[in-house]
Length: 388
Ligand SMILES: Cc1cc2nc3c(=O)[nH]c(=O)nc-3n(C[C@H](O)[C@H](O)[C@H](O)COP(=O)(O)OP(=O)(O)OC[C@H]3O[C@@H](n4cnc5c(N)ncnc54)[C@H](O)[C@@H]3O)c2cc1C
Image (cartoon, rainbow, N blue to C red):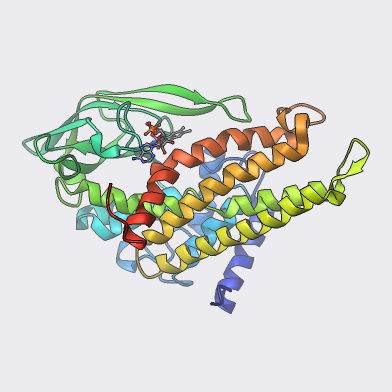
């Protein structure tokens, strides 16, 4: 199968690369999140070019140009350049609203997303509901034309910077757990919301995520995405998108290429690493694994141009999580003690990024319902193995 881009797609990719060469400044690069005024301003420039609305229907502010795969090519290029990505707002939220939201939600939110007005926080995880998301307890009770929300969410990245929470809530406590969940869009400024920071280890010392508490928060009924108590299915679709638009394989390719360059030019204890047969063998094996990852991601992107990728995105997610850890292990093996030097250390390879990647590879294994769950999807849906 030929996974190459056609001429039109290739031209678009070059246009994005030229844009990045001009516009990606140091204060914007380094994180995929749109969580500083500078990063918002950067995404505004993509919006001005019409790049956030590509492939969406014109009646909701979209443009069919330049081609169905364009939004994913854009996201890949942003990931590759370590720029803020559009995979959350456009890839996850806009696509899921388009397929499942009411006419009112599509008219209100899709044009806003395409103009980059308002950021979003994915608000699923709770203290007792992570991988097993269907156990969530945050409660929404219908009271007239409003839902009243009470409960707690945890690990909500960007909550402090977002205008909207894309929130999983329990609306029917008496049904089987997957069948009593709904999906709501909640304004961050609604009375009764408290946000407190949590910090994860990262190269900057600490990356912020958040706890969010809902205390009698009232949300208009019109903010329900799709049907009440069918939220589980919309969340599963949103996770299918998340498993390749937010958690993309693309940065792994860059990390591998960077490591190969480092191996080529590094001498340790008087021996050139590139001459070491063990190093050479491990690099060669990893090159094959990386190429498989590239193919799996392209397969997702091709599928997404015509349908929601499910098995494809699960394979992409599982592979990315596993290879991310292996790549980090390999880099630390090659670098020895130097690999553990942090940012600011004169002798740290890649400015101390290796240990940071090692720590973050653990997160990649659990994020978006994780490697283990993704393997389960492949086992059941592709291989037709029995459900456990
Ligand atoms: C930095 C960071 C940012 C995050 N951002 C967000 C966010 O923006 N929004 C949000 O909603 N959540 C977010 N999360 C939460 C993340 O999605 C959860 O951590 C994840 O779902 C795992 O849940 P858990 O931590 O409760 O682990 P657990 O569910 O307790 O899992 C622990 C381990 O057991 C394995 N496991 C669990 N169940 C099974 C099973 N059935 N089969 C096989 N293995 C299993 C898991 O794979 C994992 O390795 C974030 C987390 C981190 C660390």
